[in-house]
Image 1 (tube, helix red, strand yellow):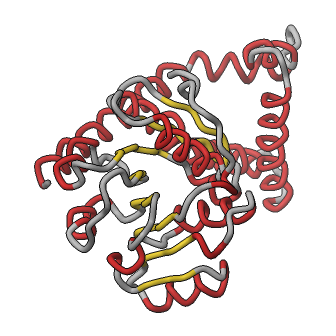
Image 2 (tube, rainbow, N blue to C red):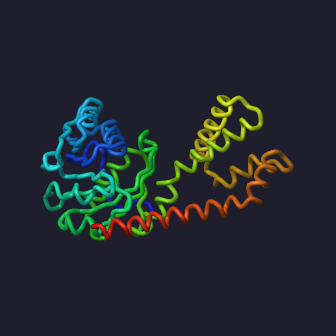
Image 3 (tube, rainbow, N blue to C red):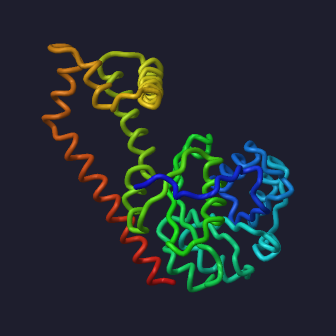
Length: 284
């Protein structure tokens, strides 16, 4: 993984008109982030077929919402594809885009080659956000083919940065590894919080207190890690006194093979992400 390519930085507020095809949670998080970053609402359009969801988006963000993608995408310089992967082929058949349009897909597994077949004259970029983007606290991995214009990369960078941090990967295959780490990552933290909460209850703590302790401990530790100049391994050592309670707990985790378990888990997630991409490519 590398830092974002050397491109001209642009602010989200300076983006040209943006169309979202699909108005689910991820699209809503990006729309909210763009508005918070200063993009004029009049430059945002959304295609959402579900009438109830469409009305909710229009009321929440005061943006134009259309029942069909063709109307929403008309004259858009940037199109964000935010439909489910299995719905992508049907969605792309509903509209045509002008040559040079920047197309950003946040659909997991649908590969660049599949988009190029249908949108050969557009600049294609794949993005893998994660769910903390709903709070503008996410991190998104991006990939673009080498021939993608710098301007399109800059637009994608600015748009995804409205939902959190952004990083670029060197190859499309690395998006599968990125999915295993950050795309799936929130679920790992939720599971660990759940385990810590339940273990506290088993030790005799009140359930509501144990829940608060587990949640805030992860929140606080994450903030410490983000603010510290030291590696997380150093931070861990600083709270692990010789012969103390933390050392005893970590010894149990290490003897149970926690590192191996996570390594196996991430390999399984990467493999499933790759297989899903293969399945979607065959369907396209």
